[in-house]
Length: 275
Image 1 (cartoon, helix red, strand yellow):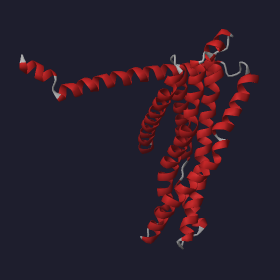
Image 2 (cartoon, rainbow, N blue to C red):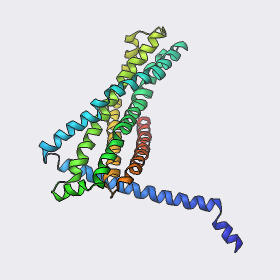
Image 3 (cartoon, rainbow, N blue to C red):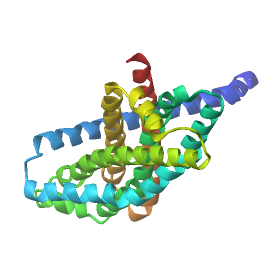
Image 4 (spheres, rainbow, N blue to C red):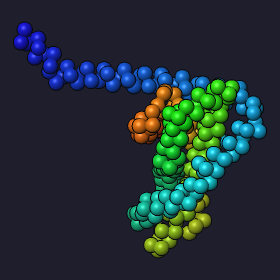
């Protein structure tokens, strides 16, 4: 009897029970997010031209909010990325006589990885949290139910504009941030008296780029934007909320969005290696 009780309370058994609960919660969350994503996609495709005079201006407004308003901080992050990473990398490669690897390193590190991730994290931190607060507050105050009572689809009116705008904004901010980072990196290398001409620097980067990079960069950034928009809108709308539940929903949305973006990034790394 004592052995049975001891085995039931053993650390291994408790860990396995905790792991089982976490796996169940993860599977349930993944199922709910997948269903919400399919609903949002279905509404975006089937109702894109419905109420276009109302929805399309909302898309433009959200693109301005998610993208244009973040250009200054994106420029700052791109310059910081260029000075802290690219400039030092160029300087080290030149110092050890490996100038021929500059283009490959820049494309692999900046274009494929850091640029999209930094842009996605910027949008998540500055805009994603605000969306959860907005939608969660609207849900808690009964505004979503009021839209449904008026015959307005909340997904069409609240989710689709944010979904499309987020995908466009992450793509545009990524391209902008990469360009600023590459230019700032060369400026830092120039200030360090690195014997590298601008034509050689940008020529190597252009030579290391392939058409697959442009396709995968577009798909990757659109995926990041889609994932962030789905998660934050889901956390704000998918379940009944009270005002005091909004901060917890915001934290949950940030964690889940970050996890989903990292998983998507790992998938694209595999695609890069295979392609």
